[in-house]
Structure formats: structure tokens, C-alpha cells
Image (cartoon, rainbow, N blue to C red):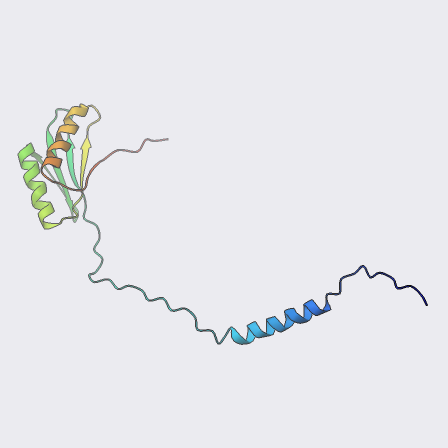
Length: 137
């Protein structure tokens, strides 16, 4: 009797059979699976474009100018601190999300900008930001 030789190869035929059976099962069941339905939320009111910000400009001589950009209208008027607060309160009473930006000349003292910001904060004016010009590279 001859001695048996050791087999040093893997028999992959059973693995291929199992893979083909699984492939057939997935191909048959995939069309039967119900695709997930996404229930999207509905919007109660129509989406409105954001309001154009009101610009409070502080010029180099510390005068205040209110610029309103509504529907192509660039109305500018000189205002005092009291007139500025009254105008901004009126606009935010009509539109609570009305943004306000402060555009100060770069030669204006920082103290003047802080005074205007403090005045607006004491008057409960919301959504106040600073307008800057991006640096050219």
C-alpha cells in the first residue's frame, strides 16, 4: 500500500456553490423588498426671501446715516441716536427677523462704534452685526 500524500491545496468548490446560492437568493428577494419611503415635513408658510439688512453707517465725523435697501431703494438719511433707535424699533416691530449691520468708517474711533452698539442693545434691537470689507489678496 502506498502512503497517502498530504494535500496542500484548498478546495474552493463548496465556497463557490454557497456563494452562487446566496446570489440567487438575493436576486430573487431584492425586487420584493419595499423601498423605504421618506415622509417629508411640510412647510406651513411659503419661504420668504430674507429681508435686506438696514445699514447704520458711522462716518468719519461720527455722524449717523441710516441706509434702507428695500426692493431696489437705497434711501439714506442722517439720523440722531434717538431717531435711529425709533426707526429700527419700528422696522423690527413689522419684521422681527430684520437684520441690522453697522458700517463704520475705518477712521472712526472704536468708542463711537461701541456707543452705537450699546444704544441698540439697550433698546432691545436684535440681529445686529458689523459690516466689513474683505481684504484684497
